[in-house]
Image (cartoon, rainbow, N blue to C red; front, top):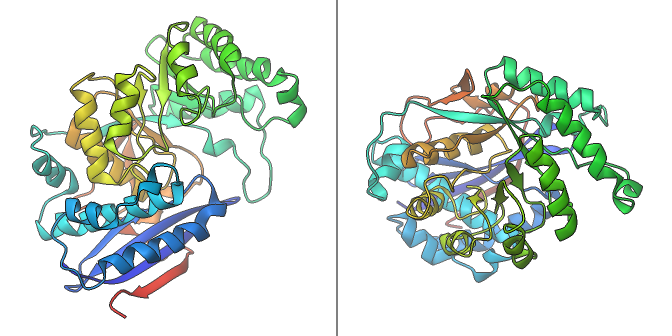
Length: 388
């Protein structure tokens, strides 16, 4: 195929949150989609600059597969620059959507064939409920973040069938709480209140968003483990604290989890082989795209069947692609889903996002099987005729 047009859309969601969606059109008028939402919205301008540069390299070129695209737009800065990693990942994923459609296959079928993976009859993917987004500021400003508010969101998730819940209890405190370490005890209170409502079959995951140093990581994980929490996500930033995390594993009982902003298969293998982390969380928006995420999962699976769980606190296009990857790999661990951020989330794609009893149900159709719902409020950030 040859790329003819590129569009980048912004869908405002909640508070300062927006979902960025890339649309690539081929000369045969086939369209492919991917999500490019970054955790730092201030980098959106850098993202657009990076996209422009990448598409110039693809102008007028007949494109045959993901490996070719990867080689053409590869940039070493992707390993350290999130905007560049996101641009590469988004382009590769949207083009893969076109390739799968041209092959008349669903994305999960296309990925299984691409990587010679065993066939699977999975029609749905088990999810865990990330309640973090629902507790961030909304269009009216700050929302309540008391222990009771955390418990109420956890109860809502349980009532919707979720057996696994993730929270970020150490976030959004005043600066003096971090200076005095008061945030640790306050966060533990939130966790403790949630664990009181869980049955033995229900699990709580804790994301620390790199709020700790080595010593506080050790002491906090011990308390969390005693409460029944064995998922200890990014107490320190693995980009800058890999040595500390490797040492930390010797002192804790639960699993160290993370890696959401890393790029490329080799880095994830290094993190697992070096025993820096137990469970890796590639994000299809940053790691290199859907094909790269599948390759990461396949290679990690050769070492440990319980080392791969996609990071996905974003919009429906991201969840859809991530679910296809998870199904292609027949991954053992549940996949992340950001719940209750907005009431009408399911309507942002067509056909509507379908989640039944905490399981993601795949739409019918080729490629991703769904597209953005442009009846929802959105803005066009880029509209480029790539051949001009």
